[in-house]
Length: 420
Image 1: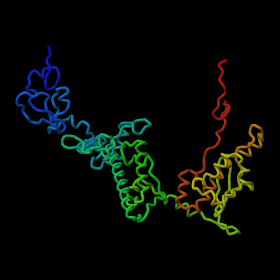
Image 2: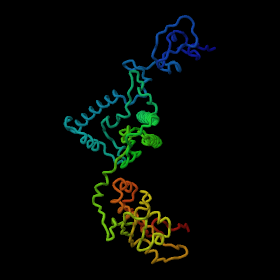
Image 3: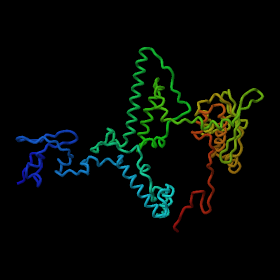
């Protein structure tokens, strides 16, 4: 009959035939674990071990300097590890230079890449799947290296979040938010107004791809959380005290379009009204647009009123998109002359019918929208012009109707296949 060991609460095995194995008190993660039952005097010498010793009664695996290997198994990119890989890389480069008959002292990175392509030709389309010999500093970025103590434990308490630098930055932003709120509360009681305000015009938050370059392994929900915290901080009255932190995650785009604005000029008509002209195209439609400043929101197209020329509300929404985006619907007047487009071909070939009571004017609406957006730039300034550019309103839509293919109904539609 097997007997239970009072020390490890397991059935006695080969290691438990004698209590001499349990004469030392286990030491786990800096805490002394007392045995469940003690009889007589026990030796109190601490032994650095792993929890696996208690579970399976296995011996401790240590390296040359006596560090427990079980405690450092999660440390992958330590400084010693990186330095070891760098030495291996240098040795590999020297051997590669000797193989190619070159001098190792003058063997550059470009020579390394060309030699790898020569020795290991590959037709794989993915560049990451091809053989390569890269420097360890490029393979193991500094952001994901782990700082550990002598026993292999990570020093950062957020290491096991898998994104310790990101969450550390998130905690810092939240601490700044609390400081700004407390400062606002104190000054509100003392009736002290902020000295200035934070001006964020001409900039926007970084995209997800741009933030991923700053932090390793950041997902889209994490990015949204970061931007929401920064937005809350930017809305505080005393956010100007944290301008450097906020602008670290914003992209300034004023200079990107300033050079183009210098080429656009405004003119003055016989009535003294300032206007700007531009041309827009969409498919086969061409629109010459003139935008007047200090207007009332009136739009005339080919001498007709806006509602009469575009009976479909979808076409109207396309035309006034630049005004809606900038919230300037009642500040300008528009005169446009448009020609071409699908409407002329549609009416000449098919005419009006009960099935199509109103001929489509999608291409004409797109051409007028492009002309309006281009003509608005001298009036709205560089900041709003960049908003139009980012919305895609300053770029011509290159899409066109795809041609019909022989042996098919249309461009993509096929004939009905019949077996017999």
